[in-house]
Length: 90
Image (cartoon, rainbow, N blue to C red):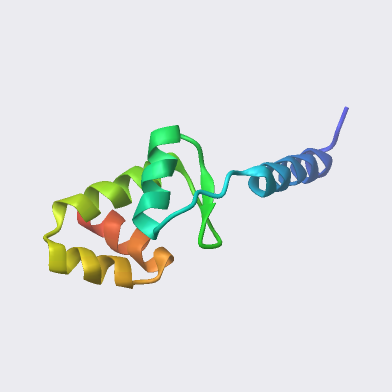
């Protein structure tokens, strides 16, 4: 039987393989996020691993904003967009 440490190491290795093999959507930032939502497949967007739920939240927040605020929202770094988005929907 494996120890907890061996299981954790195996899980980390498996996760690392999944992240490396994840698709890399093409297009603008919002197009990449829409692709993650459409495929319901986590992907690396601008170096950040984004799951479908987070991508869906970002797309919904973006779409709810007016045009000038959409530009401001997309002007933030992706990690900051996630923080802002969860604060807005939470």
